[in-house]
Length: 150
Figure 1 (cartoon, rainbow, N blue to C red):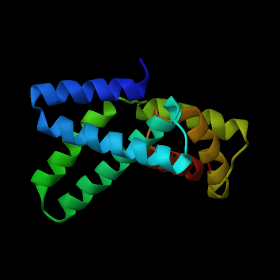
Figure 2: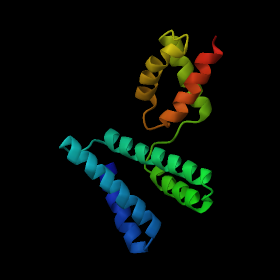
Figure 3: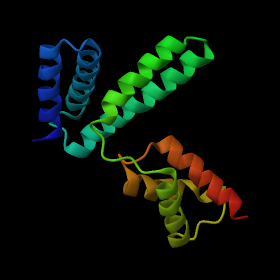
Figure 4: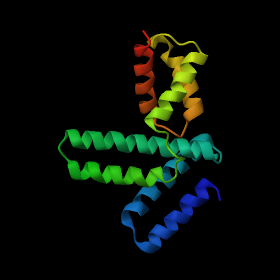
């Protein structure tokens, strides 16, 4: 079963179970996928759908952060619960240690020395870890590794 079919089936089940939060999240996901399909004028492949889900997760984390800054803890928790639903469709996420190991390999392979090489490192890292880790987390660890090597 494709990822798109899985999302549709889960939406049907959530509707039957009257799980309003899950229904809301899955409808948002279906809409985001549909918008991307319209933009690209074709059906999306699995990797592109994962990219859409990753984008929704990132936006959810950013929204939760902003709600916390504004003192709206209940809305922050709601956003985090919604991102948890999206994570169910992502491949197993890498731990910080696994990300660090992969980045160390990349840095040695492309002989990156300073922060000026961050772009090259990130290009390769996103190709290898796409869908398995958030770009922001990869970027933070890459910066830490490149500044630690000095």
